[in-house]
Amino acid sequence: MSAARLSFVFVVSTVAAACGGDDGNSGTDAGTDAPASTVVRVDPCPGTTDATVITTAANVYMPMMTTISQGQVVKFTMNAAHDVAPGTGGDPNLVVPLGGERCYRFTAPGTFNFKCTPHGFTGSITVN
Image (tube, rainbow, N blue to C red; front, side, top):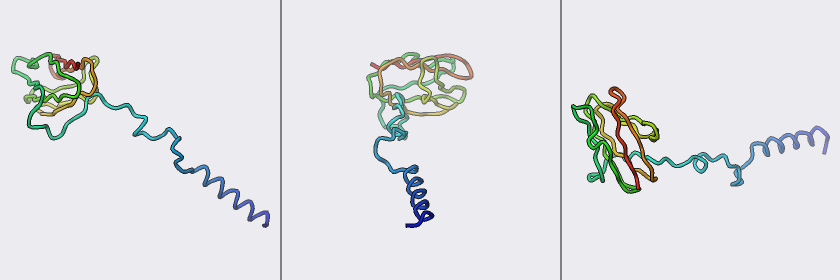
């Protein structure tokens, strides 16, 4: 085999090895490395939920504090002036727009705080 041909084979082999295949040990699969969220949107909302949080004209969440079991679903129903945004210790996935309605499943124990962005009042979900 000529030196030029041997050099070409070496370069092609090196490039192919660098591109590599999946040996199952690469550790770069985002699906396995990313942590699971503790608050997961359920869309559409089921016909029956385990708890409901609404807003009132008095600028409060009703109820302000809710306790559920791990895996249960909470329905948030906001009027046009209020929303839900993560509060201190809240999950960044817990977001309901002004006047919106969304359901979330809480998959881990803990206390998840949330707030109304325009008015600053707060609420929480405690998951046992």
